[in-house]
Image (cartoon, rainbow, N blue to C red; front, top):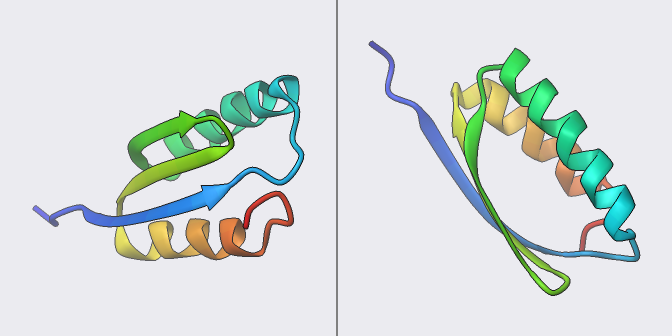
Length: 73
C-alpha cells in the first residue's frame, strides 16, 4: 500500500464572494474525488488553511493550479 502524501498551505481570499466560494467548494469536491484527493479546509474570515492528501503527483498538480489562481495570495 502506498502511503498518502500531504501538503499544507495558507492562502488569503482575494475578492471571491461567499456564493463564488460555495460554488468552488462543490466543484473542488467533485474534482478531488475523481483524483482521489482528500484533506481538510479551514476558513476563518478571508484566510484559508488547507491540507491536501493523496497520491504525490496528483497533490502536486492540484497545488500547482492553486498557486497560480489569481483568487489566492
